[in-house]
Length: 445
Image 1 (cartoon, rainbow, N blue to C red):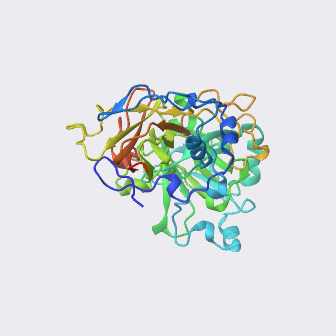
Image 2 (cartoon, helix red, strand yellow):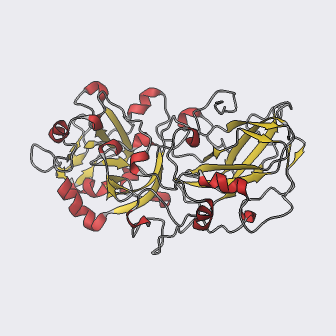
């Protein structure tokens, strides 16, 4: 199996469909009806665009039922929301904290019954607070106290969880928790508070410490229409499992996964102006929010000349939103556009962004969006689409090609008009490279 390559020719990680992601296998017609799609017209937006001399013309006859090629591709799509047990896991620790024996988990506060959160002032760079929350004083927040706050302060929002250095999301879910600011205000802060440091449990080993941080302004205020930073205890309506960071973790809506520390046990309020994130020591851009990018899910490895080519994929919708997904098929025998590193002059073709599903998957209770989920109306329908900080599926049916070897590329255009990988093409600020997938067209017959 050939791995897709980025624009410099380096091999990338496998796309989700090739990574062993668990797909929700449903009948093709059922999938289409769940997406309110009744004809191939919704998926064919090729116009008269060409690719390096190959004209992509509309298919002449558009049936009111989906083509067999697209129907088969749809059947292989994963569910929109990821079941909690099927998230990819990139946890750190030796041993991994979620693998500890139950007795040890209870001892160190990694069960709902034993969890406690301390919130203190930085002893070296103190913020002025009146009421630190400590275990020694018996004032640390326990899970029961968190649930009492949740009765009136709980929030839920949709978020794709993505690792900064991995080219595909770990999973998409509805995360539920209490805004972190509710607990910070309990300490009665007065002044000299500029940043919030937070730590996850890592085997009481200082060398394994994993930490992250945020400016206090982001914790106290939800600017740019973002959901709040939360102390999260549920995913898709289920209690957070130890594998997902339970009993309680931080979730930062617009950020990559390293900001959403698992097994959170300690918050430190500091007067320092700079971050102390573990990832800062690994040459990563620790303040880069989620990027918008596209990747394929289903691409035939071989097709016969003249046969239509069904393509499906997903797009991560980053902080700058999403306006288009585009594809481009280039014959390997032809030269690439010169002096055009990101293929801005290539003949890209619009794909179809699929509308919201009627069934979201992810093992949601009642198979419906929980009430009062941010970004959804009272009927559980998205208020806007695509939704920022989430993902969407896309599809396109390409006309048949002459025999030969080709490279398929896909990209996004964000709401500001920036084509992937712009405006932040740098690898250490999050994945956005243009995926490249090999496509072989065999002679007919």
